[in-house]
Image (cartoon, rainbow, N blue to C red; front, side, top):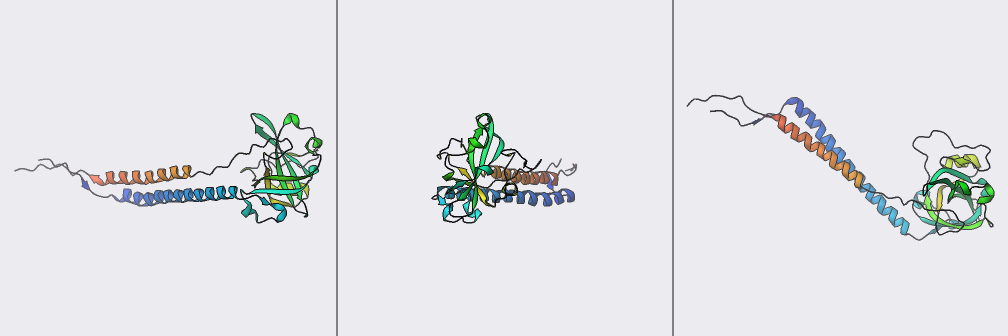
Length: 244
């Protein structure tokens, strides 16, 4: 008679690998689930702040972290001669600039940068084309905190152009160029405000889908490791002839 039943016998090396990999993969899966929960909380906080009443910066400026995603208004004077242009901005397939102008708040020395929107290359005709008949304005919009690119290939040009054209905006670079101490925020001006600039701001969306997908992947790796270890631990005993 031939015996074909497999017997479980854990082998040392596969067991050590399994003991290392399964907790590692499971831990990474749990970490991704935690990241997904953080994203959900951040998205809920962002949506709540968007729905809050607009905050007037002329009544005092809270901490920058408390202003994230808030709708704000500000009255003041545009310092048009301190305008910079952020180049290579696209709208409907056309190339142009974002116009960044500082606003000195009425009744104080505080200055906030306003992204006034997009203009095409063909519309740019020097500083005069960006000025207003009355530089004392009321600006409404959403708080934004500009970030430098992950890899900076070069610093923005701070040369002698009538209006500097920069590849990106950071508050540090702007303060160094202008000599102004600006608030640690910018305003993305509302599309409902006048003065002709194109303002189609992308709506930031925070999704937990990517982290859920990664979590499933890591848990699947842990399960596959266990299955492989189990299969390697099953051995078939040598056939034995048993005589009656």
